[in-house]
Image (cartoon, rainbow, N blue to C red; front, top):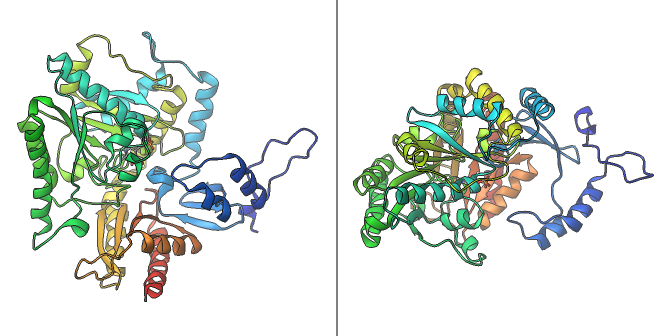
Length: 472
Ligand code: PLP
């Protein structure tokens, strides 16, 4: 054990015990006894035991056995400024002493939420000047549904209720977020779904394009499904279209350049709100502040979370374009709110986080330096690799498609089995990489250096080579 890993978060002693860190086995036993994990098969997990993460700094994590692991996923796509930033700890500490909580209901407000709103108005593109706060991306998307309905009903169009989303999109795990998302395995476990939500196909060229369509033709055809769906439902019944500018959890699926301009054209033509779920893409991931800027369209609403606080404390938000904000602001009470809407500690941490992203030019560096370096290195390293079919991404996000026959765009049978094998090789090589089906995903902290990018890509190469060898 090194000095670094000797540190383990102390636990409060039971009365009479001396204060001591628990062993990995003890942590695992307690975890298995009392903790239900999200999106996990607890039976399997309790047999294998979880990895206990005890400490993090920069782009590295340490587990309770002393392994140093490079985090290729920035936690869950959220630790944009990297781990261990004192500025964020100080902001939380000071705010907790000054005003740990007060609400923003009933005509009250407080300095941190005021500062955050002003800063967000500065950082977001020009027409976004109003923000509604919540605690997560899921709550942000619930809020989007509330705002969209309010927007249309306040203008005498209450029948505009349908929201169109995409299969294999991800918008959270509350009932509304889960319904908006297009994940069948989540829908199956819901007691009921939110009404008036329908899905069209995703722009997943490698997986779903047939025949000789170019990526651009395919993306255009997939965008035009929106028009067909609007005509089927009647434009007078459709409130909004929502999509992640690139699908994150769905596999880092990047649509060709024809997709978003066509979606925007259709939304404008039929007077439908266009919502960008920027929970993953926001705050610098693509090298732009927001991913819709990379794809060249202008949403009416944006869902924000994750990178808003770099995950140090929970916070989500919805950004309202002026044309939407005007209607919400001028039409009386908006009957929606959460106890922790605009929580002062979360807001103070968000302000400190956004200042780091801006003042240390972290987003600019992703665009001009580390992003292009990462993308080029991935493409060079995996050129003509026997099981890599596609590398998607820009800035510091990438999806690597594992395929049985890359040239023929032939995927492996039993989608997901090979991704799991590869993910385990990564894990054993002390690299965190996520697998969605047979797509291997990377989304490291935005402060990553070129040297650390080299480390991630070489570890990924080892894991993918080992996977290729196992597949014969
Ligand atoms: N929207 C997108 C695009 C996401 O990726 C996620 C989470 O991964 C969410 C919404 C839900 O956010 P949360 O888990 O904070 O509720």
